[in-house]
Image 1 (tube, rainbow, N blue to C red):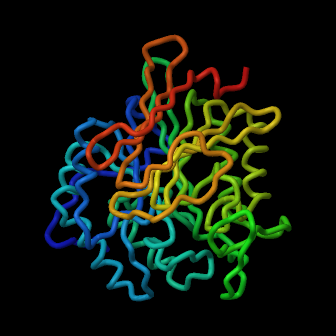
Image 2 (spheres, helix red, strand yellow):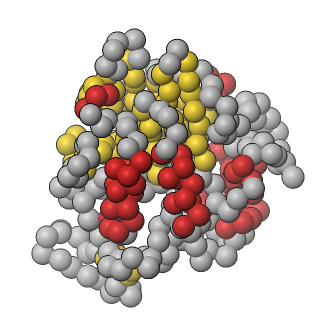
Length: 348
């Protein structure tokens, strides 16, 4: 069933095109954490940069409910926003989810309405009826953009549907001398816990084996940060290590991450023996902000605490394309710029 959101007809098809390469893109904007009750002027600012894509990285609404009508109504609020409509008319939208639009704060595979939530998500983002996304559990998907011998792959992971519960301190405040705030979670120490689930892992390996020059992997929670006691891949260190090993195993060049969740922006970089640097650009603040940034040993740029969006630009017109990572704030000021040649994030 298709839903009509406050009379707003969502016109642009968001087909995954997983098997059919489409024209190459060179400007990818992205963001996360937009509350449907609040104005979202950052979307208008993003549109002025004329991105070829805008990727919504999760917490695209704040559902936090077990009532599916409430979830639909909140998507309707987002759809009705003039700034959302203008962005949608100006560029192609892609999306994955995080916890609040999945349905419940910090939830994983035990959220009881994940199938219903998935159907609402896919309908809102106009996923075609025959899309592979509708045929398998979860919402993970990929896209290929190809022209003149260059290929960009965008992979959107699902870090909710299959994820095991986080390890908590059972409601007690837990303090650690390394941090100035109490920690919510501590890492899984055994490999029998999962973030992505085995089926998604097998799919991801097949995706990384496909030829591509640059691969942008979108994930709702941060991939590249050091442990901070909040939600992140760092709570599943064996899963993060598995992905790094998978990149090495498949010899997948040009992998970088974009992420959200934390209500501030930054760039992190992971360094692993036998692997090129893995960048993670976090843009989390379409409407949300936070009053502090957590320690992050892997941070090289940021934090940006005001509302913002991220932008990755690729100069495909030179032999060794330059990848430029930027973050722009609510006044359209460039707050972060970090550039690397593609050869620096590829196997040599």
